[in-house]
Length: 245
Image 1 (cartoon, rainbow, N blue to C red):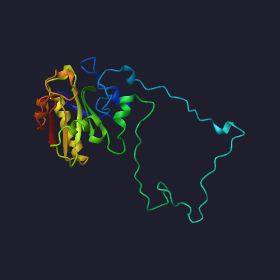
Image 2 (cartoon, rainbow, N blue to C red; image 1 turned 90 degrees about the vertical axis):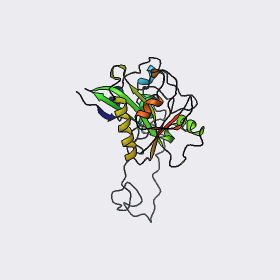
Image 3 (spheres, rainbow, N blue to C red; image 1 turned 120 degrees about the vertical axis):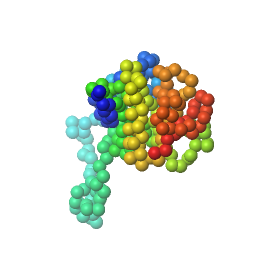
Image 4 (cartoon, rainbow, N blue to C red; image 1 turned 30 degrees about the horizontal axis):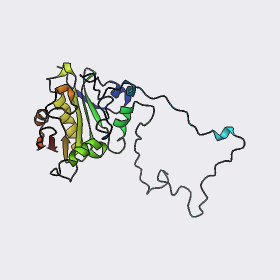
């Protein structure tokens, strides 16, 4: 039996391996429902899967203008010794040497840019489970601050602990052909282990009760109970599931 291999969605190749949702009217590859609390949508938007065409810079090239003034460099500072004052200067032994990767913000599909925006600070925002190189399960997660709609849900329930703030798992999906094999639960377990390693003390999920399996991005309360979560808010429509890490 082939073992499930779990990988981070950290590059375009992995993102492009994501399968479409079982319901063709939805698509986690183009969903911004959790990222945009006011106008976010789960709808399938094929255009979002394509990288936008690069736009030419409106700034004129000064090198081609014989009448353009040369840009002045920084003013000379007689009190600044050579090699000092620059955090990236290797000659400064006291400068921090932390180098953070910059997120992909242009030239990539819009959803990938949303998933990649935590690069260098939080880390990846999604994982997939692969069987023989084919993605069969997908999970999206991250800090509460990355998902305004999740924050809006929490604001409805003042009884939820305000500190420390939890991480959230906003989406979990399995392909129809792979259901019943425990892949989604294995993926949630890997996400929880990862979030604990990143310093989170708890994680929450916000399923919608009473909807069909393919009509929600956050599974069902019963699914989360099977993943070790408890019902933190027992709302008949929008319960809050929580797991201490």
